[in-house]
Image 1 (tube, rainbow, N blue to C red):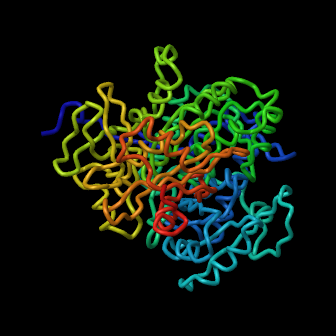
Image 2: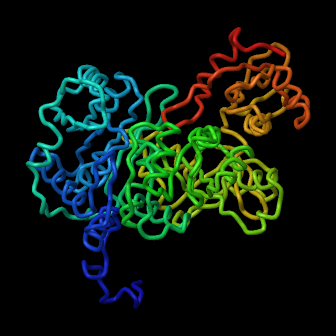
Length: 548
């Protein structure tokens, strides 16, 4: 039966429009045409100029036959063309595929083939690896290659494409009449997962999810108009957690950064009055551990967002000393980057740093515009008790969840089993509703039949004043099946023995949870700063892991 509220009340263009983050840049250019939008070295561009360039890019792609359903790959660092790609490519109807700039040629070739890229835009720094990747493609379909130039790139590289980026844009119409998607479910971006085993999976984002996550970013940070956002987080990673679209929505400033280095970050914050930035723990740790002389003159009140691992007490304390405001978020590629946040409460300021770190280290509660995030028993598909002890799997549902995995129905069906997105992260949920990860299902160490959370042991290791980074994995053991093996990266100048590390852990952990082996050295990390545990698992069974 039709409701009286539906009779003679049709959906039409006057009362309904599909959600898309592309509308954000259109508004920024209309309302704040002369406001600064992009900073890159000596380059300055306004929102009007950036919008015009995005329309030119969309037009130029369309004139080369790129349109709806076509993938356009980009191999770019955090530079102005990468900002433009987030708008210009989907304005043409195409799907943006931002490639991880640290991948090898074989991985890139797989992604170009799997995503059926019709064009690729390449920064000169990555021309060599891209040339190899193109040669390795199995798809014989023609590929339009566009070369970018950058005044801040100091190397010498031969162009590999048929067009230079600026010439390509010049051939596009500055008044290109782009249209929002007819359906907000249309794909806007394709992002590949890490692919630690086998080929990576292609995660497809839709316009609706990109728009609502971009807005949620604003709400979680109470972000006012015209923020100055520093690009420390790679834009190829979950589309920079949707912040290219967030910054446009607030008509802010994109401060571009080719390389993430402590001096460059600190200089940018001082020079441009940076108000916000995001990054993995390693980025924040880099600033905390930078020499005091380098940090002299840093402004206070900078808002920092951290994800990738729970921030240890030493990081929270270090950020507080710098006067930075740290917000902890959690998510995955499949949920557009962050989809939960750990909102701080005023009463947390009254507890000691250890307790504040424990509270802030939780993954928190759902993002504003995510429908739900909860810890669920994967067998019964019922929520676990909110007791902070019963373990289950973190699951999401709502608009901030991918369409699915490209060309992989089996993996998509498995990921969405029971009407929830299954993260594979094991966690508990506290009486206040806050979620706390205990481990990845594959990272739980089972020693003598007892479950050991690697994250719990890592939290203790981070409390040691000389530990810069730590990771714990299972080490095969003839008697116990497996035991914890700690990989520790020390702060510069520190002198600590394996016995010191074990003695520290014994003060805070039950005996069976204490690492039975310790390995010192720099930890292998992904391009986004996440520690590569699969590499450490390989090492844990070798002679490098010394029993203590």
